[in-house]
Length: 463
Ligand code: UQ1
Image 1 (cartoon, rainbow, N blue to C red):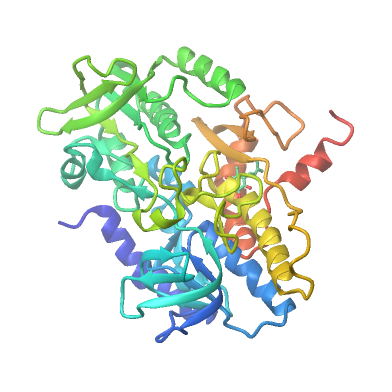
Image 2: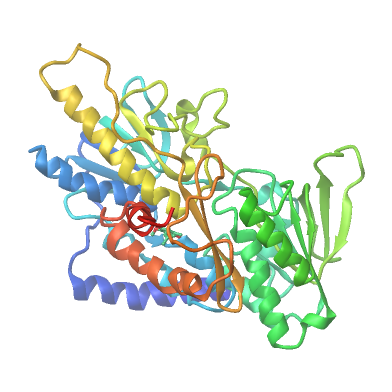
């Protein structure tokens, strides 16, 4: 069976992607035979890996290192701007706009090793690959390996997603995101159910954004009157940062969107169209059985297994780094950022915008310190400190958006000199047009550290 997203992606691979590579003639293709060792190895070609690679191509040139002393290990052909998938699932953007060939975003001057990692050995400073290359040694390592989606942890979910037109969908994959839009379009009323799992996930706002967009669509096409919409979340509130949570709770009340807290999806029966939830505060109770006509699932996620050697007792499988400096807590020559890291903030591209700049500054400082003549002196004190900044553009439907921005304490850290917990059209347009532009043209090229500079300018004289 070919579903629509695979078909679209195929056309996109064969047409647009090839066209782009040929016309721009700037592709970095994978290396046939990688070197045995590199100054800097970056694991992962996602938002974190590519932005760090771009910065270090510049830095290593400045440090007078030979070209191609950086390797990026990434097995995939396509780089996705995943924040767009909320809009793709709601029929506002095209799937093809969310991806570009990996070759096109890979900076010139790095060796792209197109293989998957199977293990990292921090003692021998080597990355063990699953393909023919075997092992690559590093002097410095950046881990930006993303997060794993555990579709199979919800019983019956994968089979349900693989059958067409049964009301089950998920924005969390290029394979299934078009199913969401199909499902919304075909929906004729009944129970629309949205879920948020009991694990760390990427973009914790996305599970509810698609609910708001579905609500808006159903209002427009006259189906809303015969629909009950419910959000089942594992969390105790609709959002982690209080001012935004309060605004969203009020918005849900006004729009008759029901919120069921501390509920976790464990099973889907797609034949009978039943979803089963455990109650996280009453695990001995029988599962709640919920009839659905549409079910948008946010799957459970976990740290990639091959990162085990870099985790510790408290990091839950994620790479254990210092929350302020992004350096590994045990191995000084390893840094990590993004979804695979233990950084206790919301896992978003906006967080990676600031993290990549902090990590790059600190790793550069560390390299200079290690390679200077006066080693053995005082302990290195890092200059760049991460405050946990993350942001989540919560699209609330009708071309409106609440632009949540907060720090490690979930305290608002807003860029604009107005109350961002209010729905605004300008923020929707920022999400739809400006942020993708900034991502492709500045962030991946190593020139975007998040909006903090604008925050400082805009708040001059205001607060
Ligand atoms: C951001 O800087 C960024 O990087 C490009 C994103 O990427 C997807 C974002 O989603 C957001 C919200 C930010 C923060 C920027 C502003 C203007 C609040």
